[in-house]
Image (cartoon, rainbow, N blue to C red; front, side):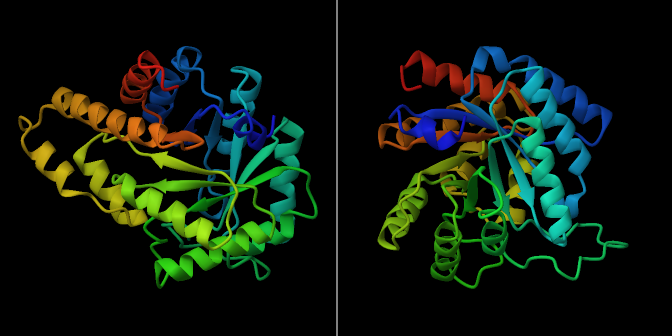
Length: 292
């Protein structure tokens, strides 16, 4: 099912992002999370695609498993950085062959270990170019990423919004945003999108606090700000008490999700980092309150 049809019902969707595991430990963590899927009943899940195609095979394997073994509706990421037209059509053809109907098209980042990686001479510089290339060639439902605080590489939020408008004009049908911990940033982003003529569904990304170290690393990578309320709240917890931090993070994210849902967002997209306990705790609260 194309995800845009889900939002036509008027009920908010619940979705999760998964990453192809790169180590045995990561694979075991993912297994535990996938075991919780039947209880959580997401409307769809997404699978990331590593920089420069670094997880191409792992992404394919996880997508296939989620579809065939778990019956999930999958939004498959595709990142075009450094890849040529044949790579793009090869991956999208594979996705179609697996039964994927929805793809999130992103530029992606340069591989962190770029030694030995040579970008294809015909690779595309922007996600907008990728959307323009893919739209006339495939009948898939294409989405793109949005950045409430602006993309970390963009010169300004206004310039970033201009690029987003191009992506939508080129054929993107929905937007999933990077996470932000302050909902005012998300709703300001939505207002600016509407003012720019962007009317496709915009689904907020939600990142629970899994650890303080991970929080800081991810915020540095994607340019998300960390509000004082989080710094103050987590600083008051017993030092090195993982359970206390986990519970605090669940409560913070659940309250953030309540506010988003009460203000009418089309859905919630939770970045799981292949972890389950926080996600289960958040979803159970929202379901018990009748918000999902």
